[in-house]
Image 1 (cartoon, each protein chain N blue to C red):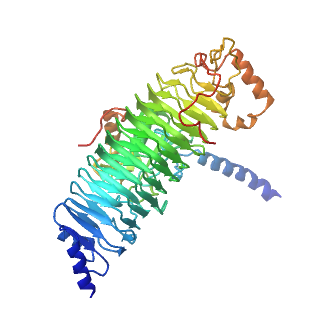
Image 2: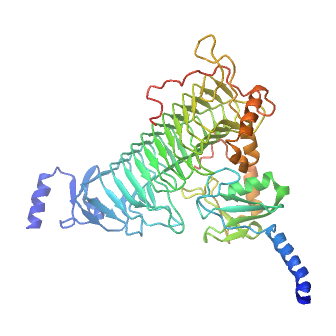
Image 3: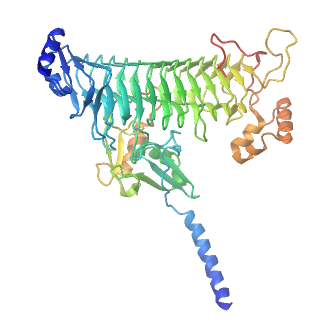
Length: 149
Length: 414
């Protein structure tokens, strides 16, 4: 009985911690073909490019591409606790953006949103470069030619 | 004897034609393409051909007899075309190898002009027909089926990247990620195709200006159809059917400018049309029938005009996320209209407000949808209709038609 009485507060503390952990900056696996991109609304389908942002309130947003994640982060910086990108060589593996590197290729096997950004463990660009690129190019809009030459 | 027979057969064929058959002198397409002269013809006799990816590097026509099958054994792309004026007709392509690093296709055309891909069949495709940097190609009357999602990935049925002046007509497409996919395409036409049962979209436009799609049927695709980030797109006489699910819609228009949506049918879908950032959209003579939400418009869709549309049997005809009216509605038929026509001109004498108060509540709190059929909600809607307090006051049809507007073809065969 005393043991129980002593264990109870510990259990309450543990439960509270577990609840707090729910709101931590951890991503969840992306539900491909079901999640809709929080920025462009497309259904997230290509497992090489899925990305996520966790807000300060613990809400997890899925994105279909590095471009969309960057656009969202640029627009909602104050609310984003952590941001994650898929290692394109290892679908299903999310890397924190600050630890990821990025490459850009404008071939037909590009990215879902046309800027050709791809995340991995190696690459010429850092997350800061990606944000700068997306800010500079602006997000592609109707009628703005972004046709690769 | 077979050799003699094939020599006789060869002799009967016009010059420049090479015959491939499983037991003849030429047994692979690769060998036939070496033998065929420029502008010549390769005839493929019935049989299953398993060989390395066939590379077509000169203008030539490849025609398959019924039962001529090229089999990729799940390992490779089947055919790559890099020459102008190539025709591929009547072949069956089986078992394209899936890969998450490479866009492998049954037929991939790269940097070529005037290709014709006609009357072929793709079975177990990863990507089906893939055009990159092409001009003036025709993809007509092909039947394409995919194996659906593999462990890692899925591909598109007819995929165009950075191409112009293409015609995509009369194809049947199912089981791919997107049935028809356009990225950086200009001045192309998509006509009379049936694209259904694809994992994501029946049709998907990205950055493709000045294109036209007409008389296609998009049925039961995972998320419907998405036409995004493009301008000057014409959408006429298509059917968007049976798209159900919380993120499914007949048609999603996102960041579009100056597009026309005319004479289409949106039927039996959770949401018929979603327009987000669709500037100056003209929506005319469409039928919205038996949808959950017929039209969802966001405030960012400036200057949209809805005229001559029928809204019949939808739970919500129009919803929006703003109290401002930035779109106009005129001369539409609303089955939910409760007004009267004393001057008998065929149009109601009091305006119709299609946005229900309850739809705003649902917009903020989805579970409240269970109250849909309650008396309380009906009273609420009626009160709001008389004295609009929360719904956009300017969003009204001043000339609601009293009868469903007639179409040249009967309104949706139900």
